[in-house]
Amino acid sequence: MCFPTGAKGAAPPPRRRPRRAIGLAAAAALAVATPALRAEDKFDTLKFKYEVAREAAMKPVSTLRQQYLDRLGELEGKFSTAGDFHKVVAIREAIAAGAPDPGAPAEQPVELAAAQKLYFGQLRARTKESQARLLDLLKRYGRELVVLRGELTRAGELEQAGAVDGEIDKIAAELREVEHLREIGGDRKLTGRFHVQVDDTAEIFVNGKRVHHQRATGQSPTTKLGVGDCVVFRLRNHAGTPKHFITAFQSDDKAYTVSFRTEDMRIVPDGTEQRVFTRAEFAKFTGPAVKRAQRVPVKIPFAHSSEWMWEHGNNATLATFITPEMVRPTAD
Image 1 (tube, rainbow, N blue to C red):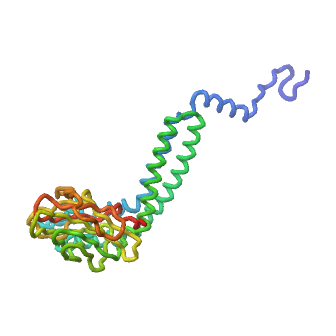
Image 2 (cartoon, one colour; image 1 turned 180 degrees about the vertical axis):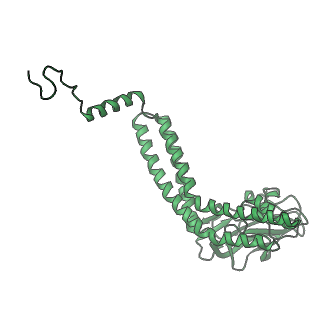
Image 3 (cartoon, rainbow, N blue to C red; image 1 turned 90 degrees about the horizontal axis):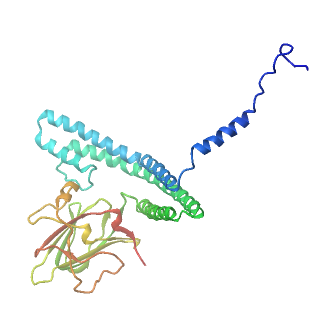
């Protein structure tokens, strides 16, 4: 017998198995040792990845807010060292509020006003960036959920498929909301009019400026209204039992309607002369407003979801901050 290498009579070297064969064997062993992800694990993994990506999408706005709060922390330290009681209190109230108010009072410290001006100066661009990222993420996550729902349905995992279907509905609703926010522009102001029915008189203040004063039924002069604005309604009943009020705002191009429901409102304490409030002040008011039964036909000439309201006393002062949920495309 002849051997290609080695001494005569020596045993041949061990034959090497192909690398691919080893790889296949290891993969098979790994498949046995590590079972495929269960249905609920696939869903949980997908949701976890979405939450991480969502946090990253919102980073431009969350970073801006943190920079604002860091600046307030610096100001608090500066004013504490100087022993300036009133400025320290103002800064601490602003920190507690978290994000600044467009309707913040004019008498606040100039340093705080400068920090808020810087915040609002960058907010629009940061918000647009975050919304664009979030919109792409929601669409991608929605597509992945649809694929997973199909896989689970084919596998007979109907309970988990139903859970995924519920998540799809949730994401679709959020997607519509983000698209709506992008459409109305966040800090964009609508130009339009308040339409009002009241017994007996109503004054309306937007960010402290009186924009309307009327008796009975009518509409305000053209004014501007946007998300984040502080709106105060000062209502007076001069005689008799009826006490009711309803209002809605429509843009002049009739594209958007702002509705006012009792749950959006807070009751301002009697004797309060302020006509604009910070969110921190607003949060301390009781609410919601008291819902009133409809006593007369609604004369507001467009579709809306506003409600009749008042408070418990003869006169009422109600306040609200305009939220994206209150602004909707005008229904046909």
